[in-house]
Amino acid sequence: MNPIALLPWQSVAALLAAIVALAGLPILPDGMAPASTALVFLLVLTGALVPLLRLPTATESFVLFAAAHGPVYLLLSGITGHEGQAGLAFFALVAASWLIAWRLVTVLSLARPTSRPMGTLLRLVVPTLFGVWLLLLWEAIVRGAGIPFILLPPPSLIGVRIANSLPILAADVQQTIFKSVFAGYFMGCAAGFSVAILADRFVFLRRGLMPIGNMVSALPIIGVAPIMVMWFGFDWPSKAAVVVIMTFFPMLVNTVAGLTAAGSMERDLMRTYAAGYWQTLWKLRLPAAAPFIFNALKINSTLALIGAIVAEFFGTPVVGMGFRISTEVGRMNVDMVWAEIAVAALAGSIFYGVLALIERAVTFWHPSVRGG
Amino acid sequence: MISAKGLDLTFQTGDGPVHALSNVDLEIGKGEFVSFIGPSGCGKTTFLRVIADLEQPTGGAITVNGMSPQEARRRRAYGYVFQAAALYPWRTIEKNVALPLEIMGISAAEQRERVKRTLDLVNLTGFGKKFPWQLSGGMQQRASIARALAFDADLLLMDEPFGALDEIVRDHLNEQLLELWARTNKTICFVTHSIPEAVYLSTKIVVMSPRPGRVTDVINSTLPKERPLDIRESTEFLAIAHRVREGLRAGQSYED
Image (cartoon, rainbow over all chains, first blue to last red; front, side, top):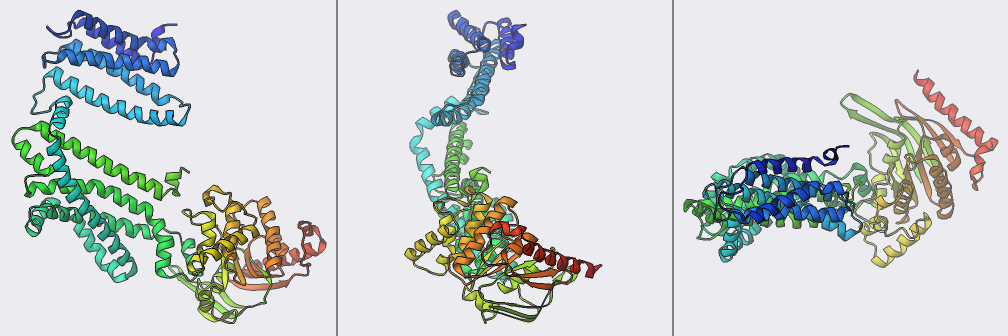
């Protein structure tokens, strides 16, 4: 049988890309040494053909790892100083190593872990590889094609900018996240939750307040932010106020919905015990509402971050993530803008992740968490 | 223990009034095991819910332990077992059984002691630390019976508690329920739509029929208190079962 037919399609595509690269040599007009060029081809061929050997998963993964990351490392170090001069061969070889990495991720995703820590490691490795390759492709395309810095800086430069501006970034995080976001988030969520309880207790509030709460949620943040600055001044309280407005309503509706989540039989049970309103709330309705409340907490974690950053566009002391983004983009320092975006994304993910972990611990009983 | 006179209950629905109960007269004495049997819509569950003050009658009079149902509920005069176990999934079995005790403000030490005793009573010793979703359906229903027994009410109201379980588990639980009844001397009202179950368990069988929900026959069982499972093959058992079936059929033909 034709050995090519035994290869996974990523390997076949990688071989084709290598042939295209061979036709488009040299990789760079006056860059890479012949030895490195030969090594790149050797590694790509190894990676493309290794599935034929039917190695054990672990060994095959190591070979694929080396065959994917070796070439891309050589190519990216070769292009340094020759940005924008890359030809067809450069991109074809980047594509080939990317395809090998794809194969690697496929192999790892299908792997049956033999032990628990192994499984955890695998679950971490696959998305990490995925993310790393997103950055590698970004880097290779931006530098290979010589895309202007102002349009899209390569991730390496953003990384350097982050490393060189740690004190500024720390101050911005301190101002925007630890002051505006946290204060606003806690007040907004607490207010939404308390009003939901009140609306549950008193019918007139439910009838009267919910439609108005709806209106509050429709308020455009762009319009509200400058008014909050006028009311609460330039510093963080005005941003916290914007965050309160943004987070209040999701918490209110979700809690109100969650309080109706307990089944009628479970409520009747409480009634047969002649349980009071607060006993029923505390022992039945709030636990049953927990999945809804956590949903709101998670939605609000991202909303709060957006709210605080956007609100800083409308006047702030000379610190804060939104302030930095708006001023640095004016000064064409896009790498700093990207650095702030990266930090915001990281902070947002951590915030969300911590909430998701707490949710798992609290609503362990829910079928969506315990699985079935 | 329970006395109903001319009890009426009409639900107002979108399709007009529904007569769930019509002119129901019934006396239930202390220590009796009473089954309510009938096709769906005959008001047997509604009657149980009226006793429990989960529904309010629209006519007639009913007393539970000599009090109004509302007062009886306030005094925690009965334990109620629903069609499903209705255990709270975030509580362990132990904590579920302790739930009524917590609400009634019983001390922690006493709670522990009672939870242990009732779990032993329903043969769930050693399962207290499990969560409801880790147990089988039959065990969950036994836990819910333990929960209804935990606070020692004299009256136990059971609404098709074994309806969702398979025949084998059901037989087993019926046997255990009789044993429990003999040991605790409680009054039990038991809703079912299984004739053998009703005859096997009861000292009194209330046959009901639908539209409007009413009592068509009340049969006092002549079976001895001691009932092994094979009593269900005795002629006496079959005679009572026959009478129940006749009663159910009479209710049907009345309608046609």
